[in-house]
Length: 372
Image (cartoon, rainbow, N blue to C red; front, top):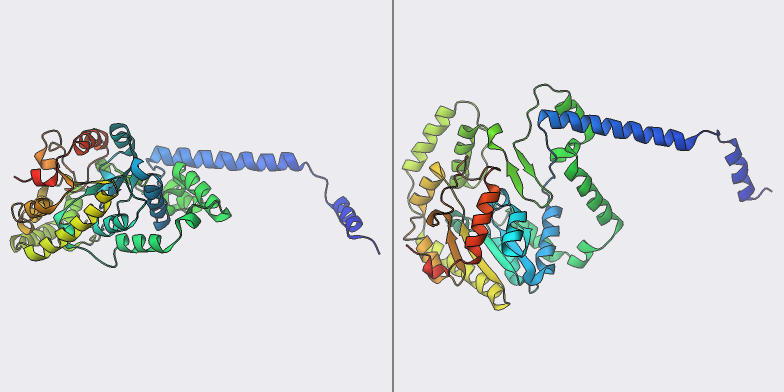
C-alpha cells in the first residue's frame, strides 16, 4: 500500500503547473485598482470614511478610561460631547489623554455612576451637563446598557490579544480609512447605492475612530434639524426625518412650548444629591470632575429656560456640588459659538471651541462660585 506521503506527492504532480505567483499578483493588482477607483469616485462625490459607533467601540474606550489612571481626560455626556470637541486639541491643552465615552441620546448619569464605582478611574472627568439629563434617566438607555455590560465582562478578556480581537482591530483600521465601508456598508452596497446612483447624497456626519463626530451643516436641512433638536429636548427621542410640511411641525412645536411648565424641583434636588455622591467618590480617589454646559440656541434654549429656570435648578445643583462648574454662556470667549441645529456645533468651530473650552475647564472654579 502506498504511503500517504507518496500519495500526496503523486496528487501534487497532477496539479496544473501554472504561474501562481503571477496570477495571484495580478489578482491583487486588479483588486487594488478596483478599490482605488471606487475610493476616488466616492471622494469626488463627497463621501468620507466613517466607523460604526458600536457598543464594542465604546467598551474599548471605557477600558482605556480605567487603564490610563490619572492621565485620563474622560468625556461623558450626550452627542454634543462627541460633536463639539476635538480630542487632539484637548490633548494639547490639558496634557492629558482624552477618552470619548459620550453616547448619543443618553444621560451622563449612568456612565458617571460606573466611573464612580470603578476604583481604577482616577483621572479628570469632563461631563457635558444639562438639566434635562439630570431628570431624564432611562434604565433602557444605551448609557445604562453599555456600562452594565462593561462591568459584567472582564476587562482583561476584552483587552486580550485573541484572534477575534485582532481581527476586529484590523477591521476597524481598514474601515476607518476606506469610504467603501462608511456607515457599516460593504463594497457592493456602496458601489450600487453610492457610486452608481446619481441621486446619492453624501453624509453630513462622520464618526471618527476616536468616537468623535464631525458634522458639516452646509449639507444639511437646518430648518428640519432645528425642529428635531427641539423635539428631542422635549421628548428625549429622535424624531423621524422631517422634510414635509415643516410649517405644520413648527406650529405644533410653538404650541407645545407655550404650554410648558417648570419641572419638579424636588426630584431635581434629589437627583443632584445623587450626582454629588458620585462626584465625591471620584474625588476621594484623587480624580476631578468638571461639569460643563455646552452651547445651545433657538427653541432648545427657550425650552430649557421654561422647564429649568436657572435660579431654581442650575443654582440648586451648583450649590451642593463639590465639583468644578462651567457654563459656556457665562464665558465671553465661548458664548460666541452657536450650534446651527440649536444643539451641535459645526465642524468648522470644533477646534477653536475645544481650545477655549479646555483652557477654561482646566482652571474652572468650584460649582458654588458658578451661580449668578
